[in-house]
Structures are given as structure tokens and as C-alpha cells.
Image (tube, rainbow, N blue to C red; front, side, top):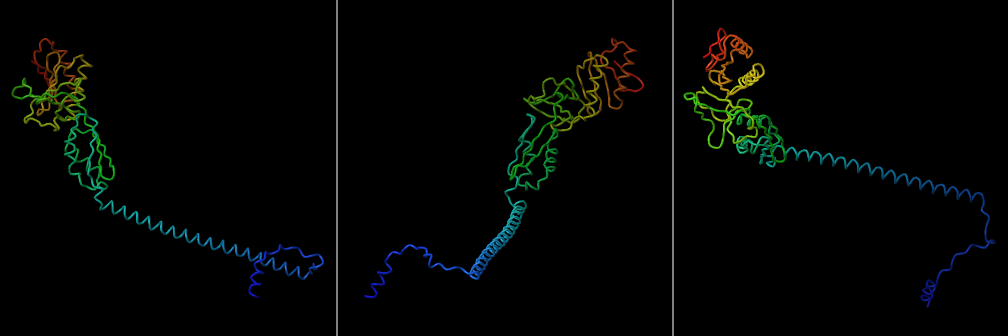
Length: 315
């Protein structure tokens, strides 16, 4: 029975709190006020100290995290550098597997350029020197003007090639029968570049308006791609034709180079003027002036030999 009454007591709802009646209020003494004040200040100081401890722990944790992050960053960086060095040194992914030839001259034979660069395939792209590629091209092709080399990682080599411009048609004449030209075979024709290299091409882009140079006295018939005429001879030939036109009003009708004798003949007004490389162009032209002052052109039938220093021979 007692057990049931206890359960009933705890089941009753609590009554709301009320202020004590004024008659029960007691006056707080000064000592009590001071005690309560000291206790309040002590709790406030404890709260501030707890906040400082929490802040200090947070700062220590942040510093520890920052140091750990820095350590991991250094370790990751060293690992990436090591992997990169390994790839550069040993990975077959960086070997040359493709060579792209970009031609700036339509007459460039891309297949020939790729054959010349065949030794480059399989070499490590990072360690491949551009000078090695340039040397291969210059040894295999004689009419190169400019070469630009670029690397497209991981495995492509890009080569941009421009050829020397063509300056003249070339007629290779049989020395035993000068009237029988043997220029060109099949659909191709013979041309001469500005560096004197003999090439065979089909209608190069510079063909229109080209002069014609006859080549005789060549001994063994030259092969395409060889250095046929020196730049000095070509330059002298060009300056001679320009001087004859500017100083004497004589248009050039035909130009002939004697390869082994190192001389050249220029035909004007149906007659040939003979020059060589021993005397300067000014000396040759001065002899021609003296000749014009001394001999009427009607007496000349075939040629005027300006090569001799002490006399002028004509026929």
C-alpha cells in the first residue's frame, strides 16, 4: 500500500514556482555580498582561462597540421620530381615515334626528307639535339635554305623546311656536240638554285621568268642534288649581264658556263663575249670599251675574247 502512494505522488504535476512573500525576505549582509562577489569573479576568471586554453590548443593543432601538410608537400614534390626524372631517362613514351615534315617549298620531296631522318626514329626526344637533326638534313639534301625544328612531347618531332629558290633553267650540253642538249629526263627538267645546286623538278613554283644557263665542259655528267656551280661564278655571271645591259645597252641572249675551265660566255647581238674568273669584272669591261673604240662591230663574226691581259682576240 505504501508503494502505491509513492507512485501516485510522483505522478502529480509540479506547481509553478513563486516568489517568497516579502515577510520571508531577509536582508543580505555585507559579508554575504562580498562572498558572492568573490565567487562570481572567480567563475568569470575560470571561463576566460578556459577560453584561452581552448584557443591555445586550437593554435597548436593548426600549427601541427600546417607542419604536417608542409612535410607531405615536400615528400610529394620530391616524388613527382623523381618520377619525372625516371620518365625522362628511361621511359619509352618519350622516344621519337612520329616525324612531321612541313614544307614551305612545293618541290620538297617529303619522302626523301623522311628517309634522311630515319636514324632519328626511336631516339629519346628529350635528349635529341636539334643540331643532330639539322646535320642529317644538310648531309642528305643540298638545296636547303632554312630548317626549323620543334618537339611536341611525348613523341613527335616537327621539322619545317624551306628550299633554296630556283634561279635558272639548266641545259647540260654534251661537250663533244654542243648543239645537242641533254637537259632533263621524262617529265622533269633541270634547274639551278641560287647556291649553284643542280636539281630536277617538275614545274617549280619559281619557273616563270627564269633565265637559261648552258653548261658545257663538265667531264662526268653531274647528278641531281650536287653542288654544280660555285656561288662566286653565279654571282659574277649575274653582275656581268647586269653591267652589259646598264653600261652598253646589250640584252643577254644566251649564257654558257664552262665548268672545268672556270670561264663563261655571254651572247649579245648574235656574238659571244668571253670572260673568266682570273680578271675582275671591271677589267673585262674596260677591255671591251677599248675594243669598241678600236674595232667596228661589223668586223666581228663570232666572238670577242676578253680574257687576255695584253691583247683582245676576236673572230
